[in-house]
Image (cartoon, rainbow, N blue to C red; front, side):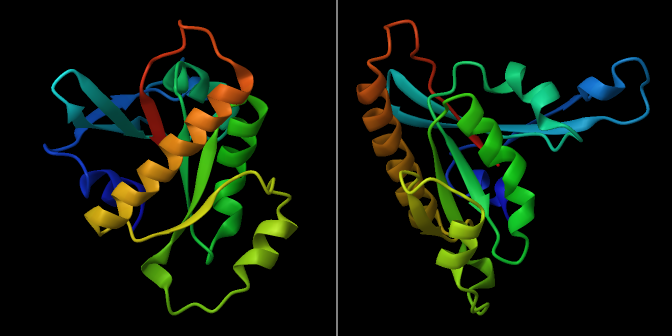
Length: 172
């Protein structure tokens, strides 16, 4: 359970699913990548757009078009498979996109030393680490609030210009 469940828990309508060719296969139609989108209305004139980032062989090759304009990201972190999150975290760090590390509580029975895992992966202490159960709407909401607060603080630190306002939040 993970990324699609996370978005499905919070959006008002069904997810929109689109298929795309991965960048490394642009010449051959042998494999399509599924991209899922959802929207949450914060008020009548303001929407938060969420999407599940595609799992391409080399995320650096294709995510640029997908995350352009994003104000932040949620990296859903599974302590059973920490290496699955490395590419996403590195991508967001390299592109100065603030993100929160959401510890996927689906495997709550696993007793791993999460702090040691995170330290061992070299994650900056500035990255917020939150607990999240992607099946629970309130938990997803709290994670998105943490992301919003972190992104606002990061933006304030960088003093971003007025042209950087697209409200996208990929979930990896």
